[in-house]
Image (cartoon, rainbow, N blue to C red; front, top):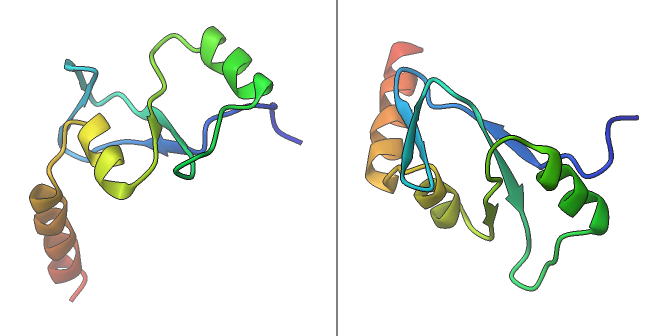
Length: 88
């Protein structure tokens, strides 16, 4: 069993720069916690976040996740097309 309260997603931007809370973090993966529109953090998640060295954004949609990472949906669409074309 893994550690209680660990965030849902570990995200990295290949060849890019992640921005977390306006701070550029080149090549640094970021944790994201995904919640439903009314979802709340469990006590174990709050405890984990308090021990983690960087902020862990709570996101409720794909758009919020992209915004938390400093990415635009348009850039993600372009990256997806490039990956699809490379696989041909």
